[in-house]
Image (tube, rainbow, N blue to C red; front, side, top):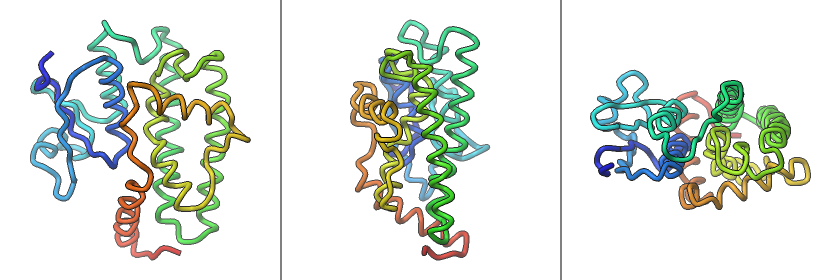
Length: 233
């Protein structure tokens, strides 16, 4: 496939395009990356995703596909000659989608809302939610991996992609708050998985550096606080 047949509208700061990058790499597909700043949003983005006006968007030929998890599934269904991302078994696919939705709901929202927490007590509640998620995912990993390196077994799968895209923002959360989220003493399998995932050829180089992302996070935090009419503690 020619490079210009696939175009990805993304942004280095967002975890969601990372999902698509990884899926494209797993399938060995060439694509053109269009970096969005979102300030302002480009005409191409607004035309390609007029409903949500968000990244990522994958443009395949002249057809835009929106929403990161939906895009990953599309890639997996269209390019079937490369390694599969979702399980082939219908029940296992349903489980993978369930845990992916759980991660996007519980994990992402807790990290985002922590940026606008008014005090340490509020932050404590979000950390408790994150702790609940990592303990649960530790068990999910043990069950799904069957003793291998990934949620998908011996290769990166759907759950790996959805959870792994948040690793950089997790490190930002840890460093900005001085508290570990992924603690190898509590969740050793998950801690080892994070290292294996980040070093995989399909992922390596895609996760932003923590310090660079922290600078973005501070600016983003001020915008969220200004919109909410609040100030950080």
